[in-house]
Picture (cartoon, chains in turn red, cyan):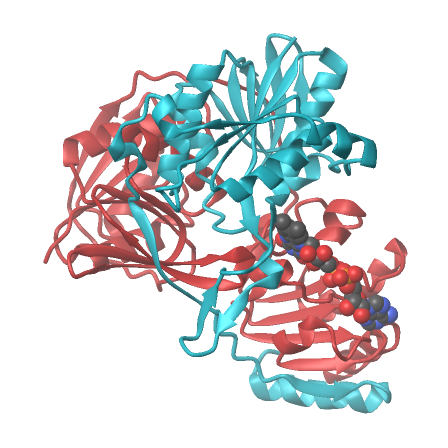
Length: 313
Length: 259
Ligand SMILES: Cc1cc2nc3c(=O)[nH]c(=O)nc-3n(C[C@H](O)[C@H](O)[C@H](O)COP(=O)(O)OP(=O)(O)OC[C@H]3O[C@@H](n4cnc5c(N)ncnc54)[C@H](O)[C@@H]3O)c2cc1C
């Protein structure tokens, strides 16, 4: 069975994955792309879009869910796809929900997989703050899903499709006064990092972060933390925490230092390949979520680790 | 003086879930329930605005009769009125149905100046009710808000998005969804709990709202929920001799090819 799929994205980082996944699902039914950025048209064709709708005027207010969902809605009306896919970024999620209400359609957010099974759409997603993997059935079409990143290896699949202009009359309902960009050290770096050193309440003083920095440096790792350290104590920049309400990361190596491993934290690092923890409590929940669990005081283990890693290189 | 609508949801305590060993699925039967964490932040923010500006905070919940408990808690925190949209014949409403019910409630019991919700709920975390309600009511939406300033005819929100913090002004009415950083929710006092117990919880059957049967028809249903597989090696390294412990660790990490 072939299926018609519509994809929206304005992120060069997500387009290759989204289109690769959409093409697998469509089984030749055709994948249409909506974007607001003319610079992304070529990339879209490169990864298998058969048609691209480019909105006009180019969105003057990025991150406006009202205008963006209106644009996707227009494209929907032209294409009548069975499935609409967005990426599960915060903006993707708020836009997908606004669009879902416009279409009075089902929506499943942050899916880890999507399939057409027995004429229905089945998705898998995490629920209960990371305690459960849920399989959900979407009962009608059109359906909307937002996809987690990292669920497919992007594959080039060049098409010679057509670009169509889509004029959007809808105006933003809100006014952006200021955007303070997040520091390079945090947001993007964490989600793409191959190695992460994460620190929690086990750290006694803010100054002791220096120790963590040194370890991160020898490991070429990005620094993240538990929520209390970033959001409550403010020792890390306030978007630098990992977990349910923070970043979802999947590095090759995750080193959790003085982190107890509450389920909300685990929800953000479950997909790490190798997990090391340093904790003085042999029974912290982190133990069950680690490959290597060093029971000890971080103030003796971390300096020793830095020393021996330095000797290696 | 603003009339503020706050939505509250009763959720299962995700730390007390049980696994049915026979089927290896997660069961919520008999698991304690509580108010969704983010909704406490929403209530707190609404109450703070009322404390400064006057007006009224109306708490509404969609769910089973047991959701009275979270509405009692909302009243004890300081909400002025509480409403429960409930229908015994419908055990579970999906996000689409809840959004229809809340927007119809807004229309019938309004006008409201502001709707404040949690950014998500800790059970299904589908983060869709806020924007859905905003669209159904054709209102602006300010999601992932970590700071909010109310000024009579507009609000300014600081929103936490992927690339940065966006400071956005919106006319009223609008729908705001809040993140946990926005405030520290107050704990009800004994006195406020007593006072709340005297206030009514108003029941609203969906039939009292302009709802058609299709709006409540579930469109996304859960087939199974299983414990996520985390196959960790769980090798414990005794750190009482740091030098040896670290040697062992580095040996393992070298074998894994991650350093
Ligand atoms: C709705 C909701 C969402 C949440 N979202 C997130 C989220 O996204 N991310 C997140 O991280 N949390 C989140 N939390 C909070 C979470 O529940 C935990 O409270 C938090 O993760 C605990 O942080 P921690 O491990 O740093 O601190 P603690 O739990 O206090 O753990 C500190 C650990 O350090 C160890 N320790 C102390 N001293 C030393 C030492 N000298 N050497 C070695 N080890 C030591 C202790 O044994 C302990 O295990 C959320 C909570 C809720 C309710």
